[in-house]
Image (cartoon, rainbow over all chains, first blue to last red; front, side):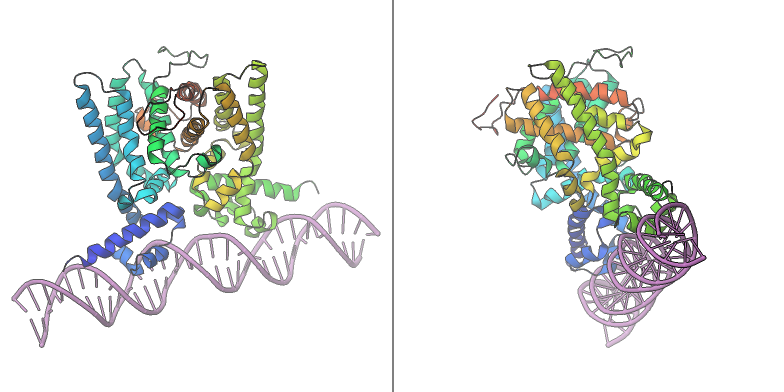
Length: 224
Length: 224
DNA sequence: CCTCGGTTCAAACGTCCGTTTCAAACGAAC
DNA sequence: GTTCGTTTGAAACGGACGTTTGAACCGAGG
């Protein structure tokens, strides 16, 4: 046969991607997914085993190429810098740009998958843990190291907080498509991906370079 | 009678707050909420009318005092500055500190409500729209104006993007309690609210002050 | 005492859910 | 042509869901 089963499988993944990104894991119904995929209800359990496995397959299909792209850009930034530390802007762009550009690439899930990704952490905790500890672990480690090299004077704890904030900004930008329109009275659009990159990268670069606050609440040994 | 109905009502709100923040709107079951509240299943519909109205009541109970606190801090920052523009750090702190401190105030919902708030935009769109357009509208307008005053040289479109990123970072910090631990190898804790404020405020202040990127993708009339 | 509005209660309603079952269809191998 | 493993199909399963119902309860007012 050519690819009869692969075909249904792919249609199920596509339909599931759309449904999960619109309504979340709980909100999306298998009957709705199989109807849109023109497949039988039982096909989900035949091909994937359960609803949760289907969800993980949807995520895995996109996140692996995405992470490869991120790491390739990071490799390029490090190669460009030679023996020196990579440029902070390049590292940040390697982290955020593939995700934002994916939002426009309809052939690879487009906005649907990106929103799904952005709200992953709101899905049942068991699912989120399987992803955080799995495909995302390597990206986290590589970018932690690269940022530490690009910002050698920064305390490690401080760096962790800043990565936390930065990833938060990225994920939230991806999910919420209404807020920017409201904040700008309709002048700016969340659909403007290159605009988002052009705004987000310098925003985060400046934030990562911020001098540590000489605060009373921060009487730890490490300062600046 | 003393307050027999008010009592059940409050217990329902408390239980619903916990359940919704753990499992989301779809994931939380009314039977679970009423059991924990030691109330009858029908009490939800007697007091609130529907599950959706219960959810909105949970949000409204906390968000109104929270917004009043934010606006009071903003008033104080503006009063302190007199005729001059308010200090950027003060404005940012007025926006983020009440939310982060609320995470520690168990008497006012604590971590449960704050996580619920952070994931609001992931709930069914109808619910999120009712909140964005309602209680949050005034806060959005006031802080937009204050930030524009504190950063007079900043393009309005650029400011909207930066507010979008900043609120994203705040909301995401609130929701994800695992990422920071992973990023710092357990050295930093999301529970450290004053630490979060001390790290987030200078991070965002530096980000808001970032010089605009001279990018090829940005050939709009307004530059720097 | 009785009544009455506000509140609680147990029970049921109809619907939708994820999952299972088992037979039918199908193409490839012999 | 028969067999076999793979894939699809229609139908049902049991359970959980939000919601509704109607009676019981109870303190206050007459």
